[in-house]
Amino acid sequence: MDWNVFQVLLWLIAGLVSFSFSLGNARVWTSIAVGFFLILLGELIPQAIPYLPGHTIPQIQMMGHIIGTIAILAMTHGFQEYYVFSKTLEMEGRRRYVYLTTAVVVCASLGFVLINPAPTADTVRLVQVVENTNWVFLALINLDMLRKIYLNVKGSPIARGFLAFMAVFLFIFLWKGSALYIQVYGLDHLAMHFPFRYNFSLLVGHLGSILASLSVGATFLYLARLLR
Amino acid sequence: MIILPRGTPVKEHLNPGRVQLAEALLKLKNNGFSGYLRFLYPAGEGLVVFADGRLISALFKEGADRHIGEAALLRIFATAFGGRGTLDIYRLAPELAESVYALLQGEVLYRAQELKLIDIRTFLERLKTDRLSGCLRIYTSERVALIFYRDGSPLGFFHDGASQIETSADVSMSVARLPGAKLDVLTSGTTPETIPGDLLSYLDVSALWQAAKEQAARTRRERQEEQKRSRVRQEENLRAAMLEMLREIAGRHIGRIGPSLVEKEFEKLPAGAPFESEGLATFYSGLGRAAKLVAGASAIKAMILEMQQGVAQHLEAP
Image (cartoon, chains in turn brown, blue):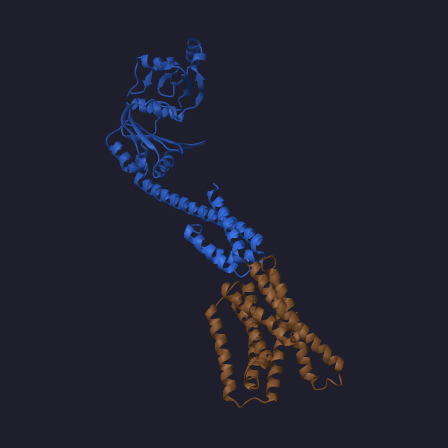
């Protein structure tokens, strides 16, 4: 089986599990689960492009990266809400507003892409760098936030779920971090000169992506079990 | 207890809280009443003696405390406003009323002597030898008789239903023959010449009544405030105990965040009736909603069930 297809399949499972989790649980999980579900779209679109009609359309590639960026923003927002709840015990908002807002942002992004000139390969690469940068730094921020949440809810049935999320973000950091490293140093163009660095980064990226997709699905299943 | 024969009843078993006592005393004065008014309250006992319309004695005994005159009247009036007590009014001949006064001023030489253990003949001879002025009080739980003496010689007898000193010893002796009869020996504190004037002639009894009324209102207010404070204290103690129990249960079921969630929902309980079913239902529902963020339905259900049982036990406890 193709490496990319395998990863897409894993993200498909993780995305479906997280989306179904967002439906049946407390409102605070909606942003987090929707964020993880968006990874599926963000990953599925660029990874599956070779198998889809219209894979040459740059707007679709660009939308994949934009949705990937929205994904990490949405889940960070969700963990931030959870952190605020664990500190203040206050919780606001409604589930449908989260879905609606996410849909509006995605549609607005699509509109933005469509009203602008067709993105060149450089533009798509730049947007991908922005996406990976967001993922890397927000993954680090989320790791710290999850540590604090864990300390606040220690002893509760769900507490260990946050340790699992920390593992998820560690894998995400490795996955997106290695991709960003390759892009920032242009290692994909200089692979001939730095084969070890390039191949090692690629390996870490693939491994990170697989572990991230596996751990996301497993974490949500674990959470569902904890919250039974 | 002030033990006296009942005399001729004028009124018995009145509620002094429903009688305008100041007016009643003035009315008795104007009618030239002779006799006594006995007030029995849970807190003490009062006695007001009239002779020919003159209020010659007011006494109020409250445990070991003994109030006389103005202070006694004030206590009698104030206690009457409590609403729990009885007032009996008995008519006596003026000289008997004065004798009763003298008795109240005197001292008790011997108290509650079992009559069956006393050699009466020897005892009476001793009274004669000692030239006792006072009286012998013979009584059971139901009946009382007094035998007055002056300088060791008997003056006469006073027993329940009589309004004057009698010379016949029949009734008095019949009390002595009753099972369990006891004897007090009292000396007389005054002679007829030292009987005081009319207390009502120099006391403003209406002002005293008003003062007692205000004092009673003040006491009632203070009692109500104390009851209120006590209720608030009890409620606070109950709230604190309840909160501690709920915090402990929540901590066990949903971890470190549990006690904080309990505190937050607990603050929303209504102050007046915090543990009524409606308030508690809101509490459990709010807590359950918040707990959903950290625990599953089964853990929350078990926690709330234990809380409900704990609350019920706390509310049932005396």
